[in-house]
Amino acid sequence: MNDYMTDMFRSPFLHLQIRNWEEKKSKLTKLMELYNLEHFISVKTTFNNISRDEEETLNEKVSEILSEELNAFSKSFSIDDFKIVQSWFQVEEKEMYHGVHNHGYGISSVCYLEYDPEIHTPVILISPSNNLIDGSSDQFYPQNISEGSIIFFPSVINHYTMPNKTDASRKILAFNIKID
Image 1: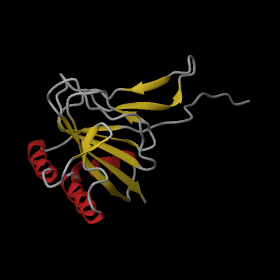
Image 2: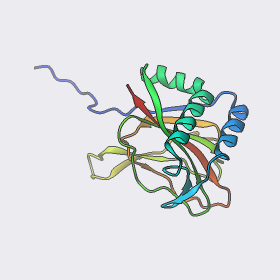
Image 3: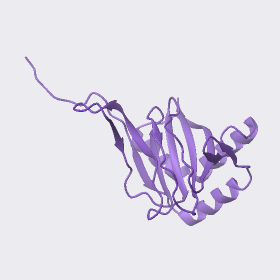
Image 4: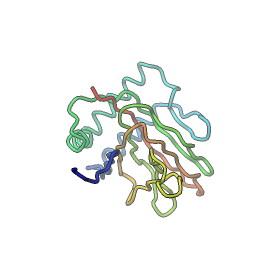
């Protein structure tokens, strides 16, 4: 009999600090200013309120601006053929939050445009499996998130944000990656 212990399920997670952050932040901020942010549930976002052509243009510009980070993602996840298929900006003002949700298939990413770790909290990811002992949902709190951080994780992972308790807005760029 061959006895062995292994993990059945693994969820990759990558956290990078964006290179040349000030330059890329300026480009992303100017890009965000081109679109109207509208209320969607309890956040302000461009999600689902831009045309298909605008979305394609936004995806291309995000791919261009974050090309170094997307290359690092590609190497870390061992994925060669991928494409950003949906990207959006999101702002959480005081008391705003994003409830538990997931994005289906592929990889999701969050880029922190305006974020102060002293007063804001990052996205929280929920384990796809409940705790073996008490049945609770284990949660993963990304560490060392700061402005200019970008994270990548499987889109099927449920995630959410805590309510913003400050007057300083938390601003992000989020996008989904389709793996070919």
